[in-house]
Image (cartoon, rainbow, N blue to C red):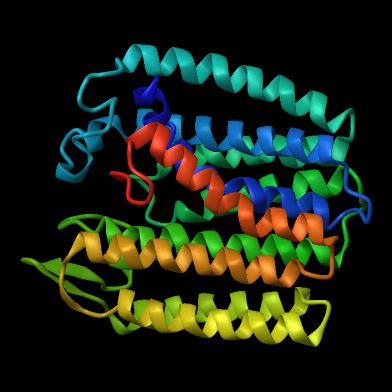
Length: 316
């Protein structure tokens, strides 16, 4: 069982689930605990089978990646054929679940289907198209918007939140992720902007710096627009200021230490999420505020222990 949980990166759903739940919490003043549970399952399924398809599409590349030799699909603990079978049946079941969850709401179902479409497009083109990060970012936007649109009309609030989710994914996957997995000869947005490896040294271009800090500034501006009181806005800005300082360290040129960059990437991702949780204070009751703050920690620790046998640091 652990091999399958590792394959779908079950532990990293700790932030995916509450981020999608926030889409629902923004739509209603009286959230249903049952529906939050159902939305959590929806987010978990999308996360799990999205990563499974990513492993399948990247299989030929991952076999030659020294950092991914422990992946169950790469080391042969799960066969390629078996993984495809699980992905097809699981995605089909998840599709039916999504149709049930959104109960004939055309707009919510449309965004749900678009989330799947853009996710597949990303996995298909990830290693072939240098700007494929746009597709996974759009997929995530559709994912977080669908619960909102099941209960509320399309308005400025969800457009701001969707834009926040888009910019977050661009930074998280298209900047931090590309830095973390930088390879000689790799083609992606950052290498297009001049970032590269020279021997064991990472050279981060000025264009990459400008691109990264513009994205971070956009995230800050969108968070401020989403805040509903001055206190949460102030705390959000403080946390984001720390994130920007950490981003500076992540983007420094120097000897390429992957473990160091992975740690920075993880801290930035976690702090970015908690800045969003701070923004949500005042939108919901203290019960759901507590959920947004506590769930990621408890889930992450539990799933790491079950899947990797460690509380904090899994092999990623």
